[in-house]
Image (cartoon, rainbow, N blue to C red; front, side):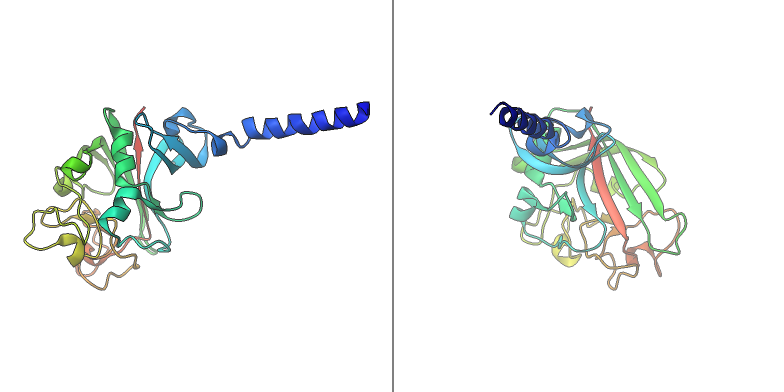
Length: 242
């Protein structure tokens, strides 16, 4: 009996160690990825408002979205963008507008967009970082505030600053038509965009002007006849609020 007790105790200690150690972030919540800056991978986030969602963490950054293979359809409804979709564990995803608004509420955040072009473009990887980033809640249609650009990719967010979010079934842009419907995406459109990172995933040639994963201000011309005819291989947006 004493031997069985020792064996059971050893198993219990091992199980508790697994729960509190290696897999701790699978069963608990972080307020922000920067709480564990050495971790990389999917984590559970809980905001100060109590909203809970999954996000990909890397070196303290919290990813808003990731696109890298086209497996996830980003041409979605307003409600889907509010709630979020996809999986941060193994798929492309978007954390959701309500979650994003709650996450940045009352905080000073910077934002970074990473882009990767298809071969033979070199350098293939460039970035755009912004020292100012926030969005409003649903009462103001998730209006974007972004500024303070630095980086190597060019600034294709300047035209989107101050704009409300639009989808094909919720037109909040400044154009006479619906930019989301016209350009097969969803974004903070004005009249309409210099960037369209939720557009069609095609690559590298965009078959219709500005309807794909577009970043027009890339510092060299990689599309033909313009960069509005180029669709990027990878695109991501991440934020750091610590």
